[in-house]
Amino acid sequence: MKVLKFGGTSVGSPQRMKEVSKLITNGERNIVVLSAMSGTTNSLVEIADYFKKRNFETAHSLINKLRIKYEAHVKDLYSTEAAAQKTTELLDEVFVLLRSFANADFTPSVEKAILAQGEIMSTNMVTNYLEECGVKVRLVSALDYLRIDEDGEPYLSQITAYWEDFLAQNEDIEVFITQGFICRNDNNEIDNLQRGGSDYSACLIGAALKLDEIQIWTDIDGMHNNDPRVVDGTKPVRQLHFEEAAELAYFGAKILHPTCILPARFTGVPVRLLNTMEPEAPGTIINNEMRQGAIKAVAAKDNITAIKIVSSRMLLAKGYLRGIFETFERHNTSIDMVTTSEVGVSLSIDNDTHLHAIVEDLKESGTVIVDKDMCIICVVGDLRSQNVGFESRIASAMCDIPIRMISYGGSEHNISFLIHQDHKKAALQALSRELFSE
Ligand code: ADP
Ligand code: ASP
Ligand code: MG
Image (cartoon, protein in one colour):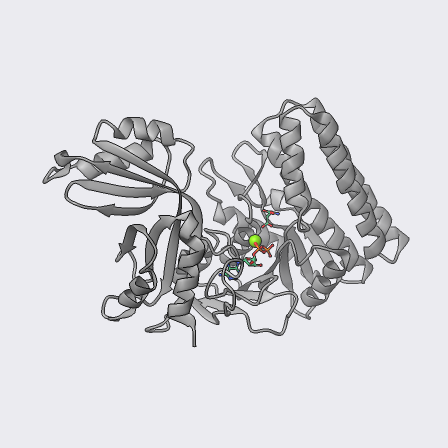
């Protein structure tokens, strides 16, 4: 059994939903995770924002626009009155619910309930379409089995227990459809796995049930060797080790949610990236195999803040770094990159919510310098120290780029550079030229 996840573009129109339906009725018994139709979650974010600002007129007009779009989708998707009627009733419930939030106090849980409606609509639409086509299908609500704790960590054992029981009780069902992205939290409120989190939902299910494969179907033929939105002529990478894929996802390769590879890696379930628009293309397989001596890909992560703390007190001092790290821990902020010298330490963070408080505390330890709008460029591959020559090729590609930090040696798979965002495009292009041109 496999889990197949289809992203927003893959279910972005009635025509695409029909094509996805063909792909998932392949004679195997599969679990299918769906995102919201492309653009819907962004619209819901906008609607939530107008509710928050108590501008109900604009919120209602955006809800209306969305309703008109979905009514047209229903007309295009179904050929029977019964399926169209069933879907219209569900969509009516969703739009009544959305409008009702005007009467509620705006809280983070209201916002999350609004954002959840995209996946609720898309999964109902595809389930009803498959039913209309005579497929033995069952819609399974992610709100019944996916729960996160107060740190956003999912309870994997609850997924296993729920699904094992559910699959055993529904042996005649061929296709199980469920929502990506959405879940509940410890207070039983609707919550989510962060934007792009449907990949994570699929990987959690695949890992919890130790399935044969996790398939992430999207709009491109696998992981490319550089960001195709920035660099021309990028090529698909056919195979990646879990560690390499995890680094690329964490450091900005948008094709995968930052943490989605972790559960697959722990359980060894391979992840395959495939293209809905070109289902025959081989895509990318992510598994435990390390291809020796190859640089695989480059990725970039934006909106990074660099913090440097300089103090002669650091010289030969014990516990100095611990004090610095504890400051970040106290303010619930995780650190991405670290470099040290005898008299200073530089760190990078991607969440600057608590930056002011962190800087105020760090001033007790030394002079603090903050640089915003930075970007991490991450090169991934077999970068073990005995593979001489790779680091110098990477460094020489970066010869015209002003570099703020370099990190190498933390893992055997990656070398990272911190640069200003203004130089990102030039850096990614130079790396592609040096590392991947034939
Ligand atoms: P989905 O809606 O299916 O989840 P996403 O938009 O989240 O799809 O991810 C697919 C997109 O990721 C591609 O269209 C591509 O523009 C972008 N992308 C960024 N970096 C890479 C990369 N290294 N390889 C492939 N795609 C990438
Ligand atoms: N619909 C959600 C989003 O747009 C989750 C996902 O697509 O993965 O972020
Ligand atoms: Mg995505």
